[in-house]
Image (cartoon, rainbow over all chains, first blue to last red; front, side, top):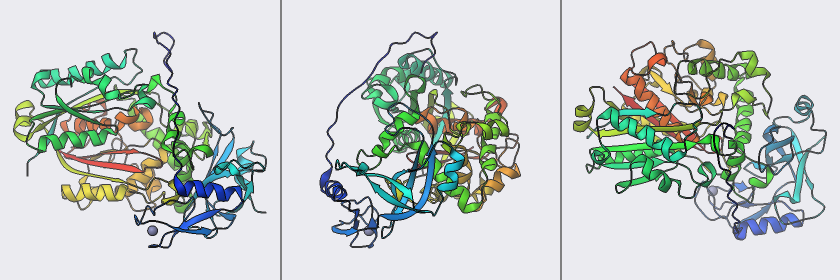
Length: 155
Length: 378
Ligand SMILES: [Zn+2]
């Protein structure tokens, strides 16, 4: 923000939006409420994408076949976030990761948690590239991506 | 084929400005016109680069900028990404309808929240934003894979900061002019482990203005025109999990630019490069993908000293984005700096070697989703 010796005026822009989920995202979230993780298979390249899309972004073809994927997967990459910023939706520190679920061909961005996250060096001993994690469900389902509360390392 | 040239450039001083965006923009645009000996009325067309709500607190920010750029009552348009604004400006000249086009990028990063608070909005509201994504998160994911796959060390990544912040000491138009040691970088806070605080670019104010002209007009306006000889741009998929973060679209963008410029060996052909590195390790990864070294050898490249100011292929003699990050303007800054090197007018950070061909690169989006490569020649 601007230094104090400069004369500034404070301004804020707050405007609400209502963004359509569309059919595929809605259905995916409905499945999450039933504790099922569903992907969509491309009829052309046969890849299964989680999170699902209505069309394959590689083939530019519709994806209409739902496929249930595993609730366990592999950590493709991860980051330990310890930087607070305005509007942050997850409390620091948190671990964000790309997780390739068994039976899926893309990375799902989600959280890894379920253990003490205060020390980055200890987290580095627990979270590993290629390590296996499994979904932990939120007790109360809201029909959104956080119905999976987080993924925890498989011991 | 018709040729198009950069004739003059002007940049705002890198420090935070107490001026409002209107006045700040006017000063730099007035300077570039004065340098060229032109009046506003003489300029054929205007292309701007700015960002709306998130980076300006304004809707339709270009409408606000119009007056300061001198664009009012003229033919003009805008892109957010300033390297794209540059190529639109070149198109307008190449169309044959305009002799001169002024392209300007303007932003006051000091006035809005940290980039980390703004870049979550790149993400969609369904899958990405609710799980705490932003640009730095994806960059750190990319860095961890990069180090793991090729054995690049954290020290090699940190060396990029030492080099670029060292170069910035000689650039009066950059933002942060303070030398840092390898130890400073390595011991800075692990804010997005493995990324450290000093490996992340700051947030800066920056107006940069570039005058572009047709071949005939350029030769009248300057004795040192800088010619556009190559351009390429490519965008990767949106969802980071769909992409290979270590093999994005930079090779495709660079390949098109090199083909257009007739370059087969970029390591030999490019004399100096201004590469957009909002995160330190990205300079190494981008250098590989630009063909400056082999795949996985970005760490060796920085160790070799080749990319230092006095090396055989200096990278970011201006100090790069790690020293100054005027978010949407940063691509046009790279282009302006490459042009100054070709003109021999970069001042204290003019590289030692003779510069005949220069490369400017810009990137935006999660983990380098979008890349533009511009080749300029003397
Ligand atoms: Zn497909």
